[in-house]
Amino acid sequence: MQIESISQERIAYDALISDILSQAIVGEIIGMSNFASLAESIDDVHEKMEAVEHADCERRHALAFMSIAEKKHYHPVVNIQGTYWKKIRACFLKYSRNRDFIGCLIIQEVMLECFAVSMYQDVGNALKDDIGALFLSISREEREHIEHSIELLQAELNMDPLGFYLKVEQIHQDCMTILAEWTAKTDLSGHCGVCKGACMKGSLHHANLNLKTMRGNALGLYMKTLDRIGLPGQKTLQWIINLPA
Amino acid sequence: MDHQPSGLDFALIGHQECWEKISDYVRMLRLAGLNHSPDEETIRDIFPYIPPRPLFEIIAKDIHEATVRGIYIETFISPDELDAAHLFRNLNKVQEACRVASACRAKIAALGGFTSIVLESGNQSFEKMDDTWFTTGNTLTASFIVEAVEMACDRRNLNLKDTNLLVVGSTGDIGSACVRYFSNKVHQIRLCARKETPLISQAMELEQSHQAAVCSRDINELIPGTDIVISVASSMLENADFDFLPDHAIICDAGYPKNMGISSAGSREFFLGGLGSLSGGYDIIPGKTKSLYGFPAPNVIHGCLLEAIVLSFANRGSAFSKGKGNITTRDMGCISTLARQHGITVAPLFNNFRCWN
Image (tube, rainbow over all chains, first blue to last red; front, top):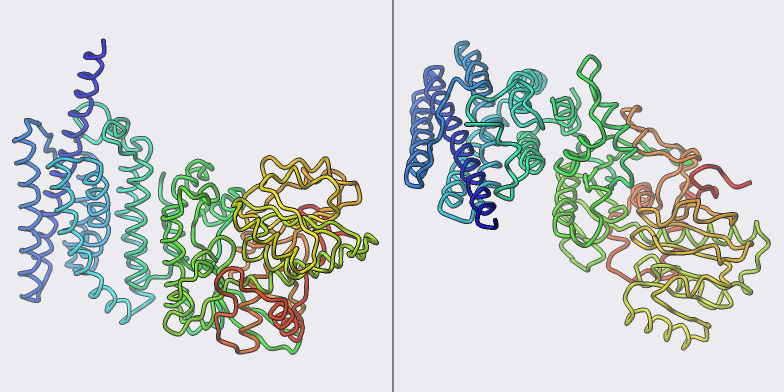
């Protein structure tokens, strides 16, 4: 009886880790594609090269997750057409097609990276094995992308405070709404198309994780990043409160 | 677009005591036309993860028409997480809030309620950050508590010299200031605190100065025969049975969060202590955020926060209240006099429902 329950627990745990890896791989591939598209929207040669370098960095992260999944005999679902990721990619493309470098930077290096850094850190701290270590190490690398963007965006804010504020507010509504739906208590836009079975949010406890903390930490890091850029804290608080939950 | 205020006279750092006020505030920020308002559970889920930030501006006026400008910085410490289990996380939040005050270039910042812990612990790095001085504001709070108690005794015809005074949280910074003030002014001082060793030494000190004193960690042992209760503990008094208080007793709850509900006072006179009144008035901008900070009486503010405002009016940059157990009766008199010069006095006596006659 006890053996059966242990093995069921193990099956649930493995299914969860497989789903977590699936989300991470898809997220990295979306990031890689975004940086590649970003390179197209930049005229400055050095920034263009940096975008390609970042795309390569995301590619390596995706490969690292794929490789550890294979080593551990997990079979992640790599579906970049999944509901939320597809919407995020479309949102990014809307800005890159307009050659809106700053808009792209805000989506990729602030919004998406804040979620990646924070969630990878939570997963890394919860999993006490080499998968956890990999998440922590990639989280640290992704944090550099946030740092890279902050100085640039501070300069943009100083040039045109109102214009920049309105721009970030619009992008927040476009992109953060999708991320908020993705991390809401229930699947607000249906099944994500990446998890293998039922939504993994209901299984997070198998790895000592919980959605409330992961979502809270991610939004907290996002708000701190907006604070560092110099956006008014009272206003960004209102943005967060108005996200779907 | 609102910019972060810069070059401010003061900043007030605080936290909320109950979810009702937080829920009202969150719903007020919710835009019309969106899906249904978030329920309290959803608000509880996100609130503690919000980094400290300014929520509103305060323009305070004194009786000479002088104005000082400041901000209220919310720490977003959860009302349910003020206990020791969350100490490390809360300390981080307070430190972050201090950095926000400093980044806003506030000349002086008051650490309200729980947040005073960083300065009470004796950590000198929190006395000043760049151009910002920090104060716990406990001296003016203690001064308002003792003034209010004296006022209440006058109204109830209680002769202080004949009364037994119970101080709950007596070894804390504010509690010990109250004990010091009332030493040799009352018949007996009854001391109640969580830690036995400092409690016993406090009682011995009083005995040495010829003030009758008893002490206990169990509040219920001290309640019978008590005429005045000053409660300045840092948590709700769950097990206190005030039914054994004499009918004429008066209760001053100056704890933050509040130590008791009015229902526990029964028929006894009960008021909220440690509050002051700003005769010149104050404005909150935007006005709709007023729901987050309000009392049944007009122009009332917590004493700790008023201390920063008083020091701003007086243009005195200093960590006026710092450390634990350092508040002298002389300092209380000093800050109280300074406050009166700007029309800042002890608040009228009131509780959650009504002002006293």
